Length: 362
Ligand SMILES: Nc1c(/N=C/[C@@H](O)[C@H](O)[C@H](O)COP(=O)(O)O)[nH]c(=O)[nH]c1=O
Ligand SMILES: [Zn+2]
Image (cartoon, rainbow, N blue to C red; front, side, top):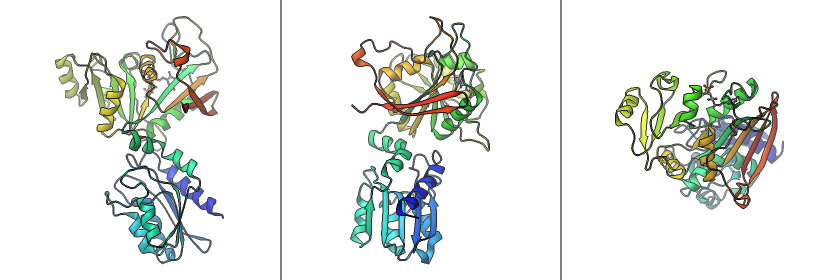
């Protein structure tokens, strides 16, 4: 095995815990001595030991004189657990490969500097691109203080999200819808507009074999129109936050609170996207999965307040001038102002295709 193979192993372990370490990054670590793997570890949940702690504990004596491969720079500050940089120094490790350097101002470069001062050789950047991709949510949240936003839509080949008569079940097939459940599992919160709640009475839970982690369910409902009998208000499967506008029905708000929902009051009649994202981040949301409908997607598009779009496209067509398309709202009127994206992945999922895109670098 080469250095990059050991780092690939560390990256694969980090990826296996994606979604469950939030708001912490997903990290993997491998200890190697004389060409033998002597320790492995991944950070599994916020508050639990970091990847390096697991790997160095497993290696024990066999860390001495060994090499550590870690996907993210070892921390050097006292968070919920003691700094890993100190542990690495004590363990006798002689060389450390780091894939991503940590953008967290508390850590940025300090962990590496501590290791070098202790006479440990440090090489950064091995498989950096792949390691950064794993923690794109964490890095975005640290840098901007906002949740990493993914807009998800399911449309026909001609871009419709329902027929002209409003039918939408189902546009995409069972494999694509199972894929969506995985995405829900990985996100701190899922958001839909009140139109989707009234139309579909959704549960918005992550139903994956072996049980998924249900995201917090956020409903954009400025006038509190949500029916008290809605499934997601009564299924007790996951928290519900209802986003209300300034002048909303106080009585309805207390009825909703009576059902265990949070009612978050925002300025103005319709909550503006960026202040809403700031409020969600303040409440600990680092990743947000916006499942529509068209008006909600339209408002995020208008503000260009997204870091990723995942569009599932089915091999069927509806036509119909009144059949809704994926992005509604006022829209962008000038060609020059079009939101530009880069396609980062196009994959088959059952008989559908999944197109992943991110904002084009300016
Ligand atoms: N119509 C479709 C979708 N529709 C997505 C949302 O409009 C639905 O309300 C939401 O998935 C329902 O959530 P649930 O109750 O938890 O299943 N999404 C998809 O991927 N394919 C579709 O064909
Ligand atoms: Zn650490």
